[in-house]
Image 1: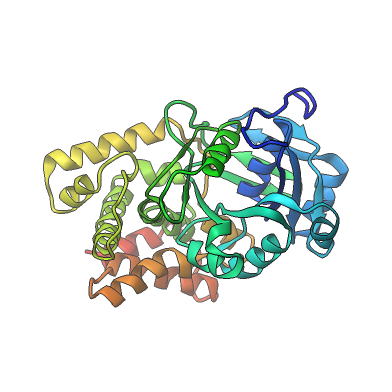
Image 2: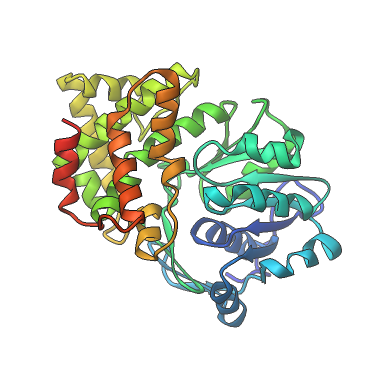
Length: 366
């Protein structure tokens, strides 16, 4: 299917112009597929080799979606003023690493046309920061759940899980105030052309629930070098994941978030499983087994990918963030603390990514 073959059916008229600040695994995947669906898309990215490869050969995709290339337009960061001055956009997506959120939001906001808005498509709870930069009325949050992709080389993205389709909702978008709006409906219709999407009136609960799910695997993969599939499949790692869920859920509830299902299970199931309830543990194991059906042996967490590439991780915004909010709330999170500490040591070169770290984690969190 070529870019000219399909025109968008989104209720936004005329056809919206889109920019993606951050064209890595998530931004590149979503932006290129919206371009393929007929939308006017520009990718903006700070990785020079990536931008040049896209310009020269297009953005190549592989993995669970097959192999094909999409010739989506791409700009270097220093060229982004072309968007702001010549062709401002209706929607700017922020898809950078969490530590780059502030400058990316500023850049995204500068690219907006009158009436335009920014969509946060990252992990953790970033909407208040973005809203403080571009304005709450120009901010919509969007969770991309288990899209599971990796920018494994310049100009190349591999998707490592099966698309969600009718079985699992990948995109959950919501207004900060929780009301349903025409622009939210239009955004969901647009994202639905990439994978399954829905609107939510509980953005903050969705955000914390996604954080719980992320922190159950991302640092485990990064500290051990294990694939996400092997982590979800293993008995020892499952036990650690349950403890991580228990700690993060309790903190989220103490903070007042109305949690959504986590890895398809209600929060209560994870708490009961952590407390030793056999029925709940069987339900957890069944959920893990079901999750394995969409996974391949190619997937590593984003944090593991960063360590392999010698890049800064999002540790401070993931397990480190949960541990910090736990300390503020008077609720200990020793498993998150242990993982955050270990990832910090690996980043500083004091430890290495190694499967043997799993034994140490088991001992540290007993």
